[in-house]
Image (cartoon, rainbow, N blue to C red; front, side, top):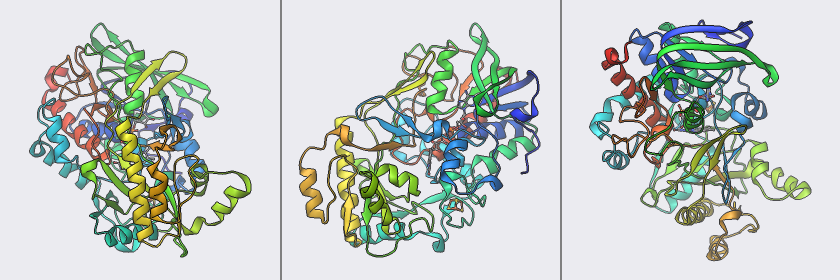
Length: 508
Ligand SMILES: Cc1cc2nc3c(=O)[nH]c(=O)nc-3n(C[C@H](O)[C@H](O)[C@H](O)COP(=O)(O)OP(=O)(O)OC[C@H]3O[C@@H](n4cnc5c(N)ncnc54)[C@H](O)[C@@H]3O)c2cc1C
Ligand code: SF4
């Protein structure tokens, strides 16, 4: 396997390491890698630290179980505390969640930016336009080559089209994607322009150093002034490796919306507004399984090639998203022979469902000895949105020719017609019976120009601290209602420009 010059992993380190730099960045995902590349390109001395390992493109095989073990935190099996609990996934590797994400790349909707504008300065559509354009150019954002679209997505388009619904081609950060549909296991062709193949190498080419396999345990400081971070390399099997101590003038935290508030809290940092860790939204989603007579072979062709946008006014988006066999088996009801019979139809299944813009919020708390715990209570209105989204998905599937659908609510039988789905859903669906997933966690260190209402200011600087900046999905004042990665990247580009424009204030 090739390794990039400038990447130092646990195997390269025999003893404790000390480093000095202008800026240390925790986390190499969408926010951290973007920030690292921008600052390094501007001549700032950057150290980037990533808890996960460095896994180059040629190591990706499409083996989803191996990917869950090596590229995800906790094997992708995070779980919120609440009723119902929501299963969530975070990437943990060089490149962060962008290595395992689906590559959907959408600008923050103008209505969301307008809403955020009352809390954050310089975030109007015109302010953000250059950063979106820069992100899209750097990551080759565009529509799929038509021959790579999967039959599952085509069936969703057929159904939505027959119903006269608005459906759009997804924009993705890819260049001539081959449609191999293993984006969630790491793109084996490098077509997906994740941070691993874009901003990380760019940062390193401009002189940044990257410590991989190294978990930052705390931020060091002298009163209000940050002085660096302390971490520890992780040996195979989770064994403790040597310590890493970095002294820096600026600490940038980009560890994602679950880990960032936890790292800040365990470093003793408090937000005067009491908002640190609060305001979590997560775009809950769920999926039904629709069975067709024809071969769908959902694993051929890129997933989520389209989005049904007819119901965005209600906070609902519908997509088709082929699941690898182990993930589908985990989602389907039943065990043993019953499950085996369902799985025998794997090649004739479309898995599709709603992603909703949630109105309720949750909280990340750092619990000593346990680490970050995610509390989230699904709001009644959001539960109703999910039920409606499932009904709409079933409608599209039947319009496309599905013979039956399995609903993602425990105890509900399968339905062979839309009328049957409606009859089933006319009875209240207990939220506890819903099978929910999230891959979009946001908002736990929210921006607000007013220190009484937010954790960080309009450019990510922590209120009440010096030399501390947050730049990841934690920043969002609320949910975007759409795939969040491009928003994270555009905000990181904007925050980097701001930091570079105020170098003397930060002494870098
Ligand atoms: C399976 C999946 C599919 C997704 N699909 C899409 C999609 O198609 N489109 C879209 O827009 N969004 C998608 N997302 C969401 C998107 O990828 C995230 O919103 C985005 O990557 C968040 O950026 P971030 O910088 O906040 O965090 P991440 O990109 O998650 O990066 C955080 C990094 O920090 C590291 N870290 C955490 N704690 C520490 C520590 N203490 N020390 C050192 N390092 C640490 C983590 O290991 C991780 O690598 C998906 C996410 C997942 C998991
Ligand atoms: S579908 Fe495209 S982007 Fe996804 S893994 Fe395959 S080649 Fe890469």
